[in-house]
Image (cartoon, rainbow, N blue to C red; front, side, top):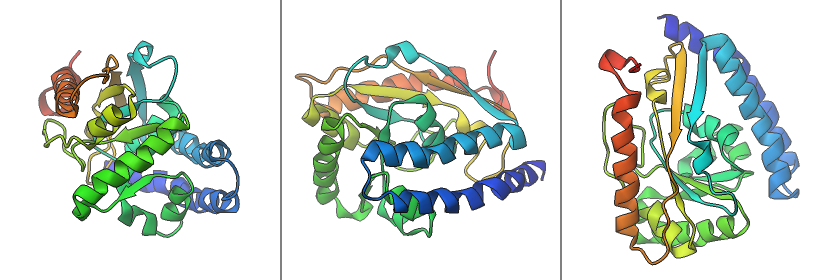
Length: 243
């Protein structure tokens, strides 16, 4: 129950400000991407700050030195909660996300999200979705915008391991950019059911995986091995972190 109350306190500020920043984003529809991104993601900074105040959830980042110094990259990351969809905006350069197109239909939230030029795909489209990912992903990467992909496709609970789809690796190989693998344990503190628990989320950024001359399946497998190999040290017995 305490976690539920913390969630409601957080939403008391997050929900109305979502409406405000979504409307601001739509008013800036004709502005350059980075202007829209800067304005709308101000909401993210506010939401993450309020999350720490209202719910006691902070975060640390390891491995920033692994980020490529120049050019955009494809991030392949674990997906455990809504937290990483926000916090990654504070950790990594300007980015877009591969997401299900239904999210764009959510009033206000989806309208503002559309202004950030996500790659919204129909999961049932099969091969067409991959073609769309490559076409739109290359466009974003060539403009210097990073692309975030959750290869498991949906949120998985801490300790679980979904099938890693290869779309993000296919995009990286096709565009000739590196893959940056990312592991974290956000699900311990913001689980899928929405309740929140105080603590410090740990994010670990792995060494960039070069894609030149490689097959997408091999790149995807390397990213999966690194991410899943990193998870045990981020998770401990009964949801506690290891020292």
